[in-house]
Image 1 (cartoon, rainbow, N blue to C red):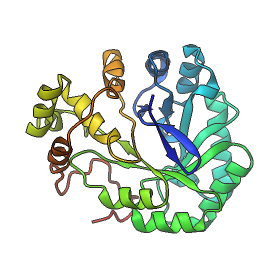
Image 2 (cartoon, rainbow, N blue to C red; image 1 turned 90 degrees about the vertical axis):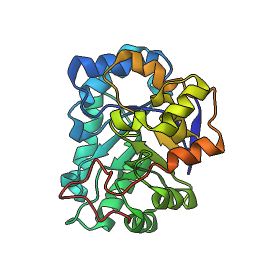
Image 3 (cartoon, rainbow, N blue to C red; image 1 turned 180 degrees about the vertical axis):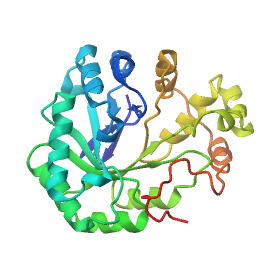
Length: 275
């Protein structure tokens, strides 16, 4: 498995996203993913599946030390006392003594960022997590978070797919030595997978459209993708993207699909996004 070096962290370039996976199905998908070679699993307190994710890791038989495990603290828990309690509760639910990466899930509009970044650093200093980072931080907030943090931030996890231009966040992450982790990397399938540049590349390389889009992600410097799937057969397909390369022309044609208003995940509590 290829990995991205980011401020001291080695992050596997493809991970399993678990948003919406629950219960026995979640445990089964995590276990099978690890059995076929995944070494990166992403969850969050808000997903309400940390127990199932932890069970999947144990069921897989893959040693905990070989798995890069990420979870996130929800925006309602970003005050320092709440933050520590949330992180400790996540560890308990996951059944592990430490995380590989702990993220602020969404920035808060009411808790000062300095307080939350302080709590994030304290969680790292206390051994709750090996590495720290943020999620859903546009460039202005990311710059502020980097400035406030004592320990280096290793990732900004953001929505990213060919329809959504994240070049500003990507450039900011690269400048800071951070990884950019793509959630919803396949948009939500459907239309994106039928776009001509994707279909043309799929035909040229004898791959599926999904494999082409995931390859587009991991072929960009410092980008990690965490596709979620509910289909066992897709697990193998999604990870089988490291033995071919897209041409510069294919990469550019897929990147040119970006368009305004294509963000899937934007809520009342979301920050002001980069233009």
